[in-house]
Image (cartoon, rainbow over all chains, first blue to last red; front, side):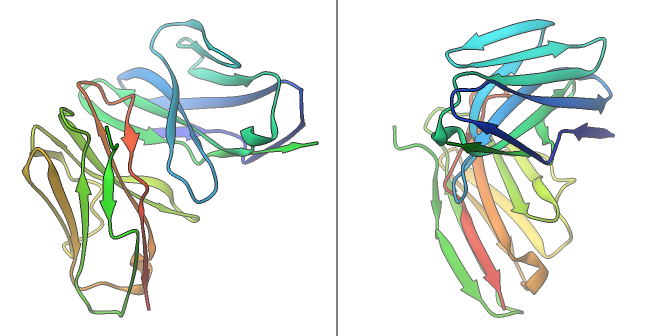
Length: 110
Length: 113
C-alpha cells in the first residue's frame, strides 16, 4: 500500500519562508509531486522530484531524500495569494497514477 | 488550449437518480484520471485510462459507479443510483506520457439530497 503524511495546517506571515514536509511509505517508489489548490479551485501542478536533491522553480523549491522517504516544499517570499492547500503525491513503478496526501492548508497572514 | 473541460459544473439531484459527469481532456493527452474529493477522504483516484483503455479501476467505490472513454476526447463517469454519500467534488485530469504532471479540470460539485 501507499501512505503519505503531511501537516494539516501551517501559518506564516507575508514575506517569510515556509517549509511543508511530506513523508511517505510506498512500495516501488518512483517520484514525488507537489500540487497547489486554492479554495474552490482545482489542483495545479507545482513540481516533481524523482532524484535526490533540490528542484527550484521561482519562489518555490522542492526537495527529495529517497533514503529517508521524505520530501518538502519550500515557499519563499510568501505572498497572500500563496494561501492555499498543498498536496504531496507519489507515483510508483507499475502504477501510472498519483496517490495524494491529505494536504496542508497554508495560511499567509499580513 | 482550453484545458480540461468538465460538465456540468454543479449538479444537484435526488437520491436514486442517475448522474452522468462529462470530461474532455486536453488534446493529445494519453492519460485520463477521475478523482473524487471530500473533506473526510481527501482526493481519491477513482479510475484512470491510458489511450482510452481503463487501466486501474480499483478506486471505484462500488458497482453503482462506472466510467467510459469511447474516444480520446471524451469520458464519462456515471453513478446509478446516486446516494447522499456520493456528494463530493469530482475532478477529471489528463496528462501526456507521465502521471506526475496532471492537468485538472474545474471539477463538478455533486450534491445528492
